[in-house]
Image (spheres, rainbow, N blue to C red):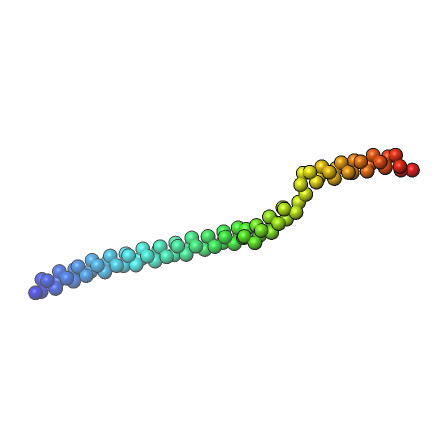
Length: 88
């Protein structure tokens, strides 16, 4: 009976050692995960959000087209040409 108790105690020591290593590994994993999550959160704060992109898209849609710009240039040149004849 004494030999069996001694063997069980030795096995429990091995299990305790393995549990300590496992707890340490889980702790390291948790700390690493927290660091990675913090860096991801910081990067996400820097990135543009959907509302920012919608605002930019709205502003871009209000920009004049190439045809409108060409028409403006032609109108300015025509006005300059007409002012040459009618200006005192």
